[in-house]
Image (cartoon, rainbow over all chains, first blue to last red; front, side):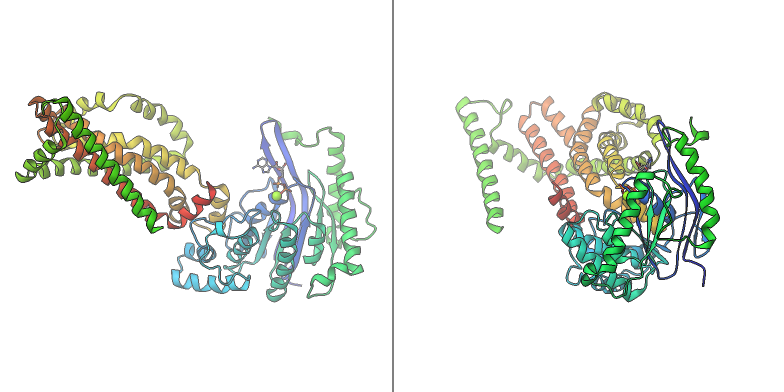
Length: 301
Length: 259
Ligand SMILES: Nc1ncnc2c1ncn2[C@@H]1O[C@H](COP(=O)(O)OP(=O)(O)OP(=O)(O)O)[C@@H](O)[C@H]1O
Ligand SMILES: [Mg+2]
């Protein structure tokens, strides 16, 4: 197999806080292959946004490596399409102009940029809303615009940070189905954070389950449900079983807080990671001995 | 839509008519001599004389020139400095005591100093004007640039936008509403600045006319000067408001809903 689009290797991350260092990620490793849809699920505040921002090159890790098509990430690049938790549209630009923004920033002619943007906007189902300003768009529509904008560069990987997080349940489901359809059409490489277990399973080829802080991988759950996926899948036993499995993994992770204590009953990690898991266990044991567990020993000021 | 516009003009017209009627009435009832309180008719008459000999246009031209130059100078310096201060908090901490001190001294007190340094000509008035305009625009620039949401900055970074492109595509449009409201304040203040400068030392301009009217007890002349200044301030404010309407077409929809 060719090299993965994204390799995250032994990532450590901590934030400096007035009371000391807040350890967020601890020895997190995983990969995303070309054309794969990977969802990330984890407890609230465990560092999912931090992870995506690290991959995007917006912030630098304490240690560890992030490789994008084999090249280390040092700074933000157009190779990565990012849809933030909030749509982050420019309020003075219409939907169409917002989608065209990346090309205009590149120095493309406005006409050419708008033309490409128009096609993308139609593709995400917003034909007829080209000239609407963001305040006149619903939350779901705004996220579609943000999605179209993130895709206009044909990025190597698309990072989605709870893109449906602020939407109502119904819109959420519609958009998830929509996203599944779009992905099936284009075979994008996607890494998406969500806090909905069924959404994570519905969309993914693989679900990454994270532990609470300091965060590492609790489990990887492959999802080999048939595609194309639609609403009927939600009732299928295979789907329901997977949702239950992911939920149990998540609960397990939340209770025990570490990968090594999770029994590997359902899942065997790939061979190349076997030795990594060993290192994680040492780190975790150390953290259990400390009461706070949030402050790196050498980093206190 | 159209009817409200017409009715608004009607209301303003009626109120102005009532104002001048009242004024005329007070003069008539009180029997005041023109050097105490001239009637509107006498003021208009004086205006006619000034228009006829062309002196009004000359003096007004001088004042308008000072205002525009001062406004431009103040705006350019204030926005440039404001942008820097917004991006470099250290610079802000370093300079803000001086900036605030410069603001706590009334312009009227500084104007004589500027006349001593830069002579009684146009330059000193332009500087007084710029000084008055400077602070509101500086503050609004800083607020405007700082108001840019961090997520939008992240977005620009993801697009590999350099400083100039972030400035052009993000900071300028984002800061524009706040900047323009600063400019509106600045525009009205600039009229004050010019007149203060002219009061201190001058031989032309609307401020000079008013001062001359005072010395000669030519009160109608004072009123003409005041009327012209009001008209000037209104025109300036209106111009900026119009520019605002035009520049913030997309914004206005945004801000209307946010409020
Ligand atoms: N810039 C920062 N400085 C200090 N602490 C931060 C910073 N950003 C995030 N944190 C902290 O790091 C932890 C992880 O934050 P992060 O936003 O990555 O979590 P998350 O999993 O995305 O949370 P959520 O589920 O709420 O979206 C949180 O405790 C947060 O308070
Ligand atoms: Mg988050």
